[in-house]
Length: 136
Image (cartoon, rainbow, N blue to C red; front, side, top):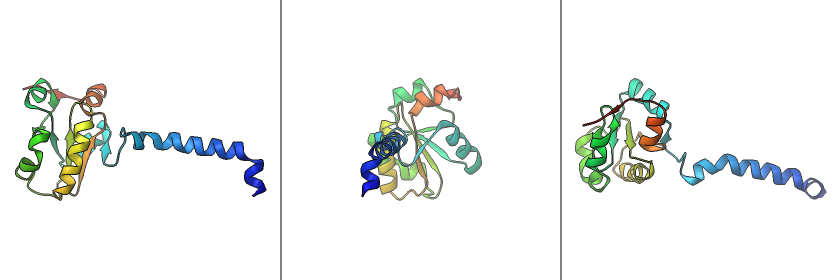
């Protein structure tokens, strides 16, 4: 017990640094199932992941990941099973900022999709990484 009393500053620093390391996961920036844009590209190339954009059609038309399919979040539960028939296929969910795709992630998991991910930072992160954007 005297060790903790004598070294309380070191213990506080260790706790604070651990909390700072966990902050991105807790705040939603790097949540469970979140992919960085470069990891998403690797998943698309290596495992033929399907990209599903959950933005509204007007946002989708303004710019989206090349080859993405548009299924608005409000219609996801009804249309995802027809868009991605094989539930073992990797699915990457995308929106403008990552907030809607995180909500879509829970819907897709509830529907039984095994390998579903959300693009961390959404289209903003995709554009910041200078990855190709398609307009329709």
